[in-house]
Each structure stands twice: as C-alpha cells, then as structure tokens.
Image 1 (cartoon, helix red, strand yellow):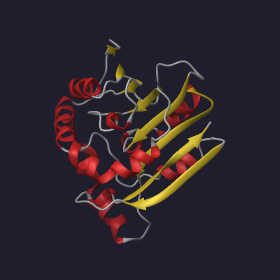
Image 2 (cartoon, helix red, strand yellow):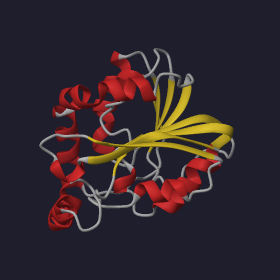
Image 3 (cartoon, rainbow, N blue to C red):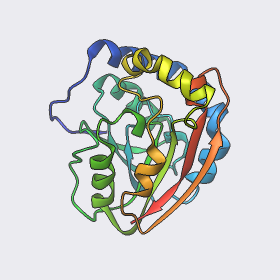
Image 4 (tube, one colour):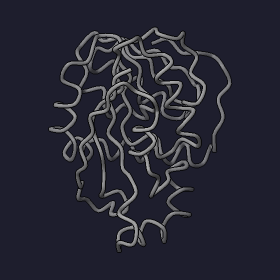
Length: 215
C-alpha cells in the first residue's frame, strides 16, 4: 500500500467512532447492497479512484489485482482499509485529500466510484467538478447515494428533525441534500440514474439513487 504523507484534517472523536462503526456494519452493508453493487460495478477497469472509501466496503466488488486510488481524509479508516485491500488482493494507494481538491492529473482515470459519500462533502459542486476533471473523455463516474425525500413528506420531516445530530455523528452526513440534481447539473455528457428505496433501521437514508455519469 502507498500512502500520501500530506496532512489531513478531521474530528478525531468522530473519525475513530466512524472507523469502528463502519467496520462493524460491513457485513450488514454487504447484505443490503451486494446485488446492486455487483451490477453497478460489474465492468469497472483495473485502475480506478474511489471517493471516500471509508473502511473498504466496496473493495470486495473489485477485480483482484485492481489498482485503487482512495481519496479518504479520515486517517482512522486507513488500517481497516489496508487490511481489506490485502484480503481481496487490491493494490491500494491512499490520498488524504478532500474530494473538492483531488491530487490527480486531469484526464487521467477511466472510472471514479462513490457510495454514500457525496452526502458528507461540503461542496458537491466542486467535488463533482473534480471528479469530472480527473476522468478521461468517455470515463464514467459510478455512484450510489442517499438523497432527500419528497418535500412535504413525513420522511422529509424526519430527515430534517434528525439532521443536526446525524450530521455530527456521521462526519458531516447531510440527511436531505439534493444529490441527484447536483449530478444532473454537473455537466456530464450522459447521466443514467435510478431512484430506489433502501429499507433498513437507518430510516433517514431510505430514498437513494444509483447509476453512472459519463464525461
């Protein structure tokens, strides 16, 4: 594993809590998302970038000997991320960048993936511009994200009610951000998106989207 030595930032309490929690939830996450992720990631190239891989929930869906460039600012995720990469024979490079400023050359990668991550990014417009910048022409951004419920709905009310504690505990996760609109307006040449509901004890993130966008 290669790791960029640049300084990263973040709340050390939340960082440790989330690293531990995402590790514990790995099996449950696989149970919930395995079919959808296998379909979404079925034709990924051997070299790719992941935005916010956390403890490595997506690594099991990559081809063995893939080269994964992980954009992950939470240093407390690194040990588990490295262990998961070794388990599945993945060549891992960690860059402790924020998604709004990715330390990669323009037009340099064929694929970028992100799952349940854009909700935690302060400036999605900048992050999506960075994703588009590093993609080669024709390259694809694969995403699976939770989104805001329909305005005026009971679920939207629940999302707003729990937003502040949820935002703190889950490292800046916004319960009702309009991520779908942001992706649609980011300037990709094509966007293929599906709305679905993921039912689990984590009620505020029930409405979700998945798909891909082409540079």
